[in-house]
Length: 294
Image 1 (cartoon, rainbow, N blue to C red):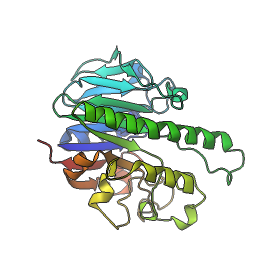
Image 2: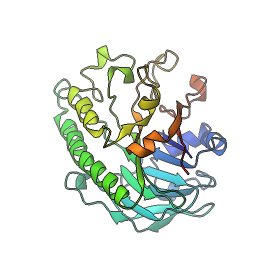
Image 3: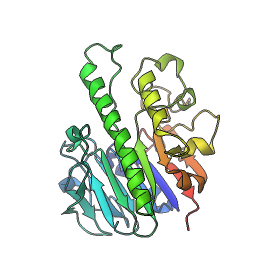
C-alpha cells in the first residue's frame, strides 16, 4: 500500500503547478494533505480526481485545512472541529458529521482545520493528517511569546491525543499512522543549516525534545528515518527564496509516524523532490512510504 503526505500550500495554486498530473500517476492509495487553504465553496471541481476526500477546511478563510484522500469512503472520521466535508469520487462537496475529539489543550484549535483522522474501509488502518502550528522563536524573537505559547499548548495536547488515538486504534484491531507537517525538525540530520537555526522556530530545544517523546519501540516510529538512518534528510521543505532549493538547503518537517507493527511493514520511503525550481508544486515535496500490508 503506497501512502503519502503533501503540504500543498494552497490547493488552487498547486493545481496550476501540476498537482493533478502528478497525483494521477503517483499510484498512491492514501494521501494526506495539509494547507489546502480554500473555502469549500471555492474548491475547484477537478481538484481531487478519483479519490474520496475527507476534508476539515476549518473556519479561517485562506488558511490551514487538512484532508485525507482514499480509494473508498472511510468507515469512521474524527476531527477537532466538525462538520467535515466529504467529496465522493467525482461528486460534489457535502457536509457530513464527524466524531469530535475532546482534548482540553486542542479545543482552542477546533475551527482551524489542523487535524483529521479516518479509518480505512479496505485495510485495518487508522490514518491521520496533521498541520501543526508554526509557532515562534521566543525569547529570541521579541513580541512572539503568544505564538510560542500557543504552539506549546498544541504540542501538549497533541502528545496526549496521539497516545489516545494509537491505543484506541489498537483496541479496534487497527494500526495507526499520522502524517503531515509537524513544523519541527527533530535532529541535526533533519535540516541542512542546523547550526544557524538553533534559535529558530521549528528547531528550538524544547520542540525537538517534545518530538522525541512521541517516539519509541512501543509508541510511534519515524518511518522515513528508520529507512534512512544516519543520513542528512531526505528534506521535504525548502524556502521559495534564494538558492535554498537549488542547494538542497532544506528541512525535514513532513513525517510518517507509525505504530510499531505498521512501521516494520515499511519497505521503501522517498521524497518526490521536483527536478527543478520551476517544476515545484509547493514549498513542500510529497513524502511517500510503501507499506507491505496484506
